[in-house]
Image (tube, rainbow, N blue to C red; front, side, top):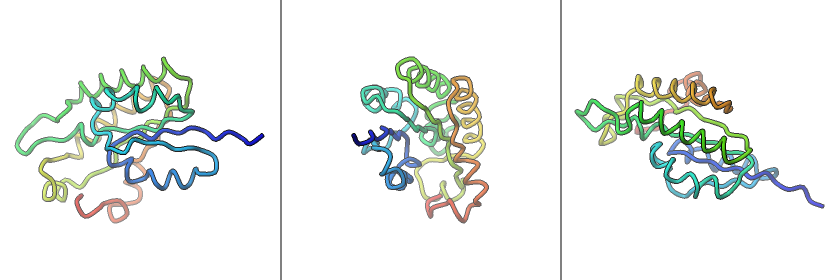
Length: 170
């Protein structure tokens, strides 16, 4: 009898979209990897799509991330699209749903660094490193509270240096 492959779901924003093909290729012999076609966006959007993207699929492993779209600030606006308190509440609900509904491995991935100047020049909104660090701190604290594995993409990218991780748009 052939061995059953693991079911892996990848959920996240453009960070996930950047590594999804590599993950699928690397795991092809041991896992069926699924992810939505669209960008997962911010934590509100992830929470709204939990059933469709994760819970209805009953995966063995879920790897998820959100944050880049939460920290967005329109030019000249002080508050992020999803303020840090709302981000924290959204993640509490997401993590709680995952822990209460399924017995799966859940991996939380931190948000990767941004270059503020390049980002400002090439986007219609800002993202600031200090916000990113604060949101990552909140997400990691919650992930530990819910006993999730943490894939610290932020540290991996910082250790690699900007020349290795930045795209032309920051």
